[in-house]
Structures are given as structure tokens and as C-alpha cells.
Length: 427
Image (cartoon, rainbow, N blue to C red; front, side, top):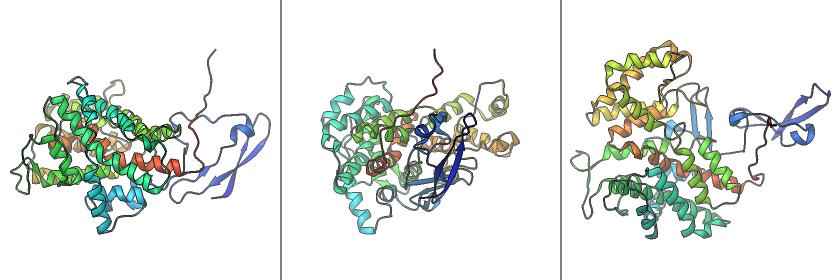
């Protein structure tokens, strides 16, 4: 809705043009410059789109200054650890939390859609054994488009629902298959008697034909505390507004490509170390530091402007205050330390880095707080999740966000093919 306007004047010609200001329900308003080139013969220049709104959205809201994150208007603090991940998926897809019956039905549907076509086994087995699971996962999701080609033309609400629930259900299976292929061990099929998060851990850890029970005592292969922790991590990763991978998904959607191809592109974008691969880099750096006694040396290097070394897992492009997801994971880390009796070398190194950084004016003045990658990497390591699976776990959580953003794009009559312009400086 536009009630006010902004006047733009070209100092070279004196020509002035007014542009409507679109009101936001939260956060900054936006200037509608869709006719700017037509009116002025100029482009706007915004590398990285730091000041550009590429779409209207009702899904997720972030206030980086306040450290605020909301899904469909609900603060993340009211969802993570209090609603199951699948209930959060329902919220993102349908703009409301499910009733008890709806939650049960959605859960059952996801369980029964978790199997993948046997033909995908041949694709997975064709990869080298040392292939990164993200490479296999991206290819597997792209291949899903050939098994469900009908989703290329999605029109009704029922078709949107089937397409979305199908990809949410199958991503954990493909991720677990990719992991087991890298180990050269038999693949484990989904068990429809298990919940979403439990089933993923089961497919990663089980032996063929073996039974795995969930016990609070932790005597079996999977502990309830592990399920709850990983479910919370999935929730915290479910969506994050117009980040790099989501922008890629919307961009591919704008071409009319198959939705699963758009998700595959998002997976490839997420793999980058500056995006979803950051939590892998956190653990790699902790391993490089090696011992608590070495932490001061690396802190000093991080503060030295002439040293290229940078601490991984600190600071955020959007959050200029504490990352709200990091606050939640900080509490979860402390809880896991007590419940699982954690006292690993890497955890002690991470806690010493955190202690120094939160009290050091260099980091505080620059808003270099620990972010979600810092804590999620440490927690996944504590849960004995292999480092190569950190980013696939991010994918599992983010899939619902990507597909919800894809649906919103397709249903928006103002959507058009993504085609940025350029400031040409060549010959």
C-alpha cells in the first residue's frame, strides 16, 4: 500500500520524479522504483542487494538491529523447542500452527512419503565414495524432478501441498543415503513408525535388520535428548527471509523451472563456506586451534588487521545485535553439556573463544557476536554428527523455507523473471 511518495531529482538535468513508498507491516518501508529506468534512463547500483527488496513476502521477518526473527509473525523463541519441526513446517506452509489432528495427519503423510524411487539408488551408487554428501544431495534432488515431472505444472492447493510435503519428506532420506554411500555401508530405508527427526538419525546410524529403541537412559544408539536437540536445529534453520540460497530458489523459480530443480540450486548455493558451509568451517577451525592454551594466540590474530585470519562463526550480515537463533542454541549447548556429560576438547576451546569474545571490546564494539553457525557446529559435533553432514542437516531444515518461498513466488501476480541490470565499465 502506497500512501506517501519520495522525490528523486537528477542534478544534471533538474528533472524530478516521484516514486510511491510501499508500507511494510514490520521493518523498513520500500520505495517502488519499478519505473525508475523508464523515467530517468538510469539504473540503481546495489552490489549484493543490501538495500533492495526483491519481493513482497508474508513468511519470515528479521529485525537485525533488535535481534528478532519471526515465522509467520510468531517469534522464534515461541517455536524452537516448544513446537516440533513438522509443526513449524505446517506453520510456514499454511500460515498457522496445526490443530492436534492436523499435526498428526501431516506427520503421518510425511512418514509415508519418505521413501524414494529405487532408481535413485543407482544415481547415488554412481558417485565416488569420497564424494561430499552435498554433491550427492543436490544431484539427487534435481533427479527427483524426473520422477515427479507433473509438478512442473502446479495449479491447485492440493497439488502445491503434495509437491511440498513430498520434497520435505524425501530430503532426509536422500541425505542419509548420501552419508552411508560415503562410508560404503548398506543403505537403511525409512521406518514409518519413527518421527521425522528420529527417522533421520535412525537411517544414519542403524545396522541392516537391526532394531534401535529410543530410551531416556541413552543406552541405545539414539537418545531422546539428541532427537529433541536436532529437531530444534531443524526449526532454527527452517527459513531466514531472502538469504542467498532463498534468492537463488526464487530466481530459478522465475524461469519456470521444476520446483525440485529450484531446490537443488538452493542446495548448491547453501554449500558455500560463506553460507551454509560455515558450521563445518567452525569445527575445522577449532580443530586447527587444537588446545585451549592456543586460544589467546588466535584471538590476537583475529584482531590484527594485517593478518588474514578470521574467527569463523562470529558476526552476521543481517543481525547487528545477537543472533536470536544463537541465543537458543547457547542454552541448548549448556543443556546438552549437562545431560550428555560433554567435556570434549573442542567444546572447551569453543567455550573459551566465546568467553573472550563476549567480553572483549574489539568484538563487542564491532557486533561480532557468536552466530548460529558457531553453536550449531559445536552441538552437531557433540551429537556425534560427522562434519560432512553439517550442511546437509542445514538443507533438511531449510527445505520447507525454500519450498514455501517458491510457492509464494508462483502465487504472486507481480512476479517476473529475475533479470538484474549492470553498470558496464568495459571497453
